[in-house]
Image (cartoon, rainbow, N blue to C red; front, side, top):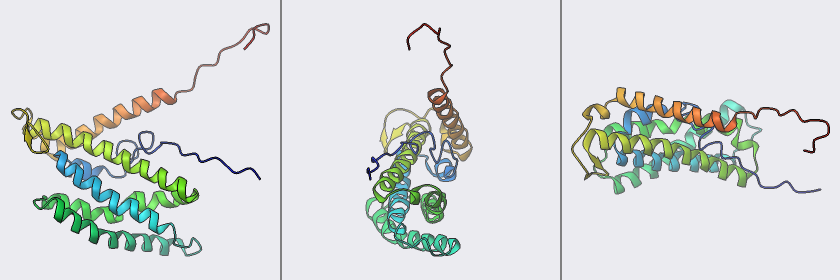
Length: 210
């Protein structure tokens, strides 16, 4: 029997981006990604809690009832929060408490509790690992884009280094974050729609070679 080729579609980057397209994890980005450092905190936490949790939870037998599996996924993610918090305390000793709140909410995020059952765990382990990582990278792209722009507009800095005077101080507000995510989502949908639009059929003359 011919072995199937390793194939992973990069849906998680743009076409099914969990922030800009699916809207599954917009709240942390809107509320907490006011600076590039905050975005880094969220991305690192998301990787350690969600991605590691997905890799571990794959070994939970699927013969266990669905409701029990979901509970076990949350327990594994909760356990991963402990080393995540230790790493964050070491790397970001002055981390904002508001950001930590959204890190805690990542324990029950939709990527781990829902996408695993509908997509990731239907694939071989290697493909699943790459596919899930692309979703994490897609989350990082959205979070860093929002964090970079809002920090420069609101504070005139980037990772705390001063670049210029603040341009739009209100850029740090959740309302501005909501508007910005909406604009980025619209741009992402327009680009994805343009790239996936079906080509117009071309009618050939019977005597014309294809």
